[in-house]
Each structure stands twice: as structure tokens, then as C-alpha cells.
Image (cartoon, rainbow, N blue to C red; front, top):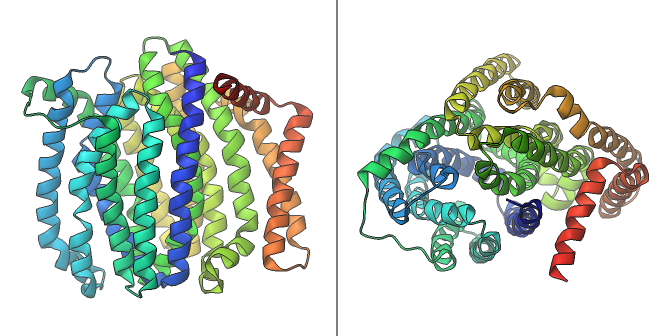
Length: 480
């Protein structure tokens, strides 16, 4: 795959993610201003269960559809029938388990909400095939259109229900409408419909790879959501709502930046899976550009958190500020981890991927258990940040063994962005000490951060700044 094709795809994917996630973030902020923290705590528990169930629905087969060198037309329908059958069985199981789950978390009045929201699993089974097909074909402009339409429609419906005082139903309807509309629109733009065909032999081939991806994804999802399950049980729904709200903007922005790269790079890496030197070169560029955007964004969020939370959410959410700052710093690791894991996945080494997940999650659980001893939500947040940083070192070991990407490479690719981001954060903090109205203070801090970071990067002509500028020029030159 030519570099200019990858670069163009990255730009389209970045636009898609910014617009789609931006719409979702705006909707979320409006809903947070209308609804109580307790409501978001309850939804956090339900969506954590949905996230794990979704891994079973996809079964790693959607990734296999993207990663495989050659696929047949019938593969999409084969995987669809498997996914839909699993989704239906899971829904039935969770439908009957809903009262027990609600009783465990002492949220018995939300059983009906739980059962209705679980319906999105059925639509996820359809959507996963559509997105796999479009991702494999690198049709990111079509994905942009589909996600924008579904996000806008579901957002408007959710806000209307919130204004009408429907409480938690506003969030339930928001997620459900998003899933339904997304499946419909993706069906039109992907030009894919399930056919009456099923191949047992092809299912075995795809599952041979997908099973290990599924196991890895399940472990990752389970342990990524374990904080939600523990906080939901140990603390109140309100406290969970505050914690999840503190994590929402940092994780949304960091994963938006990262998914822009990894969703494009998985098919790009897969096409070069027999050329490890090319994959290493591509990985260096991806991590460099990712860090160039991620590092200033996350450090900046950590500093402006006190003002940003009060301006966006009102003072009712001020207790989430410490979580916001700490979890912003934890998300610095997102600039590195997913890209390395995508490279390993693209090599077809799902065995290494699975072993790596087990080691990573054991370390994470140990740190989580230690943080629980302090009986503090802030300690849990700090523990998560520490585990994220340790995670980087763990993942780099097999990355080096497989493609030769070393710790020194990481320092070369991210060092300048880290130091300039640190200097930017210091300047932003100094500006935050000026006694002016909140909105003006927020604007001054954001402008200062942008000017300092871009100015210093341009002044020293850092490699990452030059690379980012070259990609932007290439895309606009092509459009012209």
C-alpha cells in the first residue's frame, strides 16, 4: 500500500472520528447538564456489561475478515449468522439475569432499562460485519457519512427525551437509536446484505485466527471494565457517575486520535505482514504522529480540568475534576499501546497477542488490588495511571522481538513531543493562575497551549511536526 494512500486514509479517518466523536461528546455534555451523576453511574454499569457481551458477539471474526489476505464473498454472511446467533443467545441469557445483576448492584428499579438496552447487541452483530467490510476496503468516507447520520439522529432524540424529564430513559433511547440507525445507514453505504449461504470450512479457517483474537479481546474488555464493576459495587452510583464522567473526555479524545491511526493501519500492516522492516517503518511513523497529537492533548486536559469541568458540566460535577486530570495523564499511553498491538495482530501472531493480554491483565489486577487497600477512588485512578505506564514497557518487549521496534525507537519517536508538551502544560498552568472569568480563562489556556506547542514545534522543526505538515499538504494537494 502506497504511503500517500495510507496518509489520505488517515486524514479521512481523523475527520470522521473528530466529527462523529465531537457530535457524541456535545450530546454527552448536554445530557450531563440535564441529568444527575447517579443516572450516568447506572448506565456505566450496563454499558460495561454490553462491552463484554459485544466481544462474544464479534468472536474475533470481524477482525479475521479484515486481517485475512484473501476472503470469499460468502465469508461475510457466514460470520454474520454466527454473530447474530451468539447475540440472540446472549440477549436471552442477560434478559433472565437482569434482576440478579440489578440486585447485586442495588439498582433493582432499573431492570427494565437493562433489558431494553441489551437489544443493541442484536444490531451490533449486523454492524460489525458492515464495518469490517468497509474497513477492509478502506472506505472511510462512507463510514464518516454513516456515523455522522447515526450520531446526529440519536443525539437529537436523546436530548429531547432529557429535556422532557425522562431521566435514564434519555440515555437508554440514545444508545438504542444509535445502534438501530447505524445498522440501517451502514447497510446502504456498504452495499452488503446477508445472503442465504453458510460455509463451515470457511468458518473454521476464520475462527482459527479469530478465536485467539476473541480470547485476547475478552480479557482486555473484562479487565478494562473491571474498575466500573468494582466501583459500582463498592461505591454509590453517583460516585461511579463522577468517576466515569472524569474519564469520558480524556478517553474519548485519546481513543479518537488512536483509532484514526489503528483502524487504517490494521489493513495496511496486514498487506505488509511478510515484510517486517516495512511494518517497523510504518509503526515508527504511526507512533510519532500519534504522540505528536496525543501528548499535548492529554497534558493540556490534565491542566485545564478545573475550569473545563465547571464550564462544560456546571459545578455539580466538580468532584470529578481529580479523576479527569489523573485519567488524562493515563491516556498518554494510548499513543503507543494500540499501535504496537495492531502491528502484532497484523502479523497474524494471535498466539503472542493472547499471551501478552494475560500478562498485562495480571499486572493490572495486582495494581488494582493494591489501590483498593487505600479505600479511595482517587487511589484507583492513580493505580490505573501507573498500570498504563507499566503496560507500555510490557508491550514493547514482544514488539521488539517480532519487528525490531525498541525502547530507543520509542524515545526517538516520542521524546520531542513529550518535552514540548510538558513545556506547554507549564505555560498553560501559569495562565490558569490569572484571575479572570471562567470562560475567558478557559479560552486563554487553550489558546496558550496551541500557540506554545505549535510554535515551539515549528521553531525547532521537529520530525513529528514536519511529518504531520507533509501529510496535510499531500492531502490538500491531491484535493486541489
